[in-house]
Amino acid sequence: MRRTQRNNQPSGFFTGREFSRLSGSILMLVVLAMLITSASRPSTWTWLAGEADDTAASAKQVVEAKKPAWKETIVPGPTGAEDSEEQGSLQEELQAVSDKASLSAEEMPSYWRLLRWARSQSFSDMRSHARRDVLYTQLWQQPEKYRGQLISLRLHLVRSLEHEAPENPEGFKRVCEVWAWTDESQSFPYVAVLVERPGGLKLGGKIDQDGNFVGYFLKTMAYTDALGERRASPLLLGRLQLDERRAAATSQPADQVAFWQAMAVGGAILLAAGASWYWRRRTRRPATADADTSAETESWLRATQAGDAPPEQVNGRFKDPSSSLFDVGRQPGHDE
Image (spheres, rainbow, N blue to C red):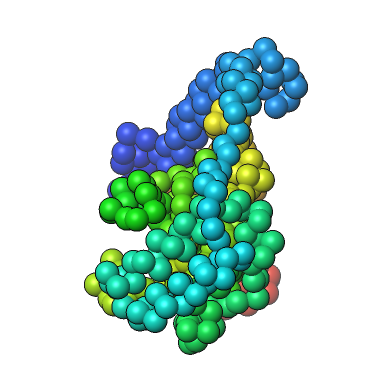
């Protein structure tokens, strides 16, 4: 019998076990480099040591704290809350307003008048007289009922633009336009035109800020969205005050965030490596059993090739290989 040997050499440069170990080692080195880089920055440990005055980040915070806080600009003038003549003029101008349509030249007098009213009052004064029970559906279904009324809303801002104002009788040079939704309106946005851009308000097509708005409802203004669909949203004119508490809660030092990200990645890799090692340890066959089995196989192959077969084992007993199957039932001493 020709003896055949199986080729147990790996087909690739690495076996599966060696490749996984090498990959894990490389990942651990990367995480270790991230941790060392993050830990080498003093600002990483500012939150733990409590010594912000000795770091560059704390110095920057001190400089920003010394900057004067933003203050709204108030231009004294008549408002609808106190002047009946202003109210009468507004009611005449609102007769030219049409809903679910773009702003027209006939609607601009009431537009600038409401902006002037908002500019002549502070945010707190306007909010003290504003309604807080008006819903999006009410403005959509009955706009004529709420036209010109002062409304307060909690807005989640998603878009903010600032542009030069066209020539107008009230002397506005720039106006700020924000698009936002409320917890009640959900995916249906409001359009708010501000008399001025509040400090800290970001500009762009994708922002994520919260604020409290108070202003006058004018109409449901039609527009075309990014998909080319014709839509309409409530248009309000007034003032916005950003939620500073949310901004302070969500802003974290970049070094601190990077440090904890590296810690999380390193912990995940260590956990995966430990689980892999435990699984391989449980499923691995004992080395002694493999050696014994290999030795028995080698011994049997040698005996077979030499023509000296080992005794055959049947039901736990050994018999002479020269005896036939029919000799098993013979009793000793009885010859045929």
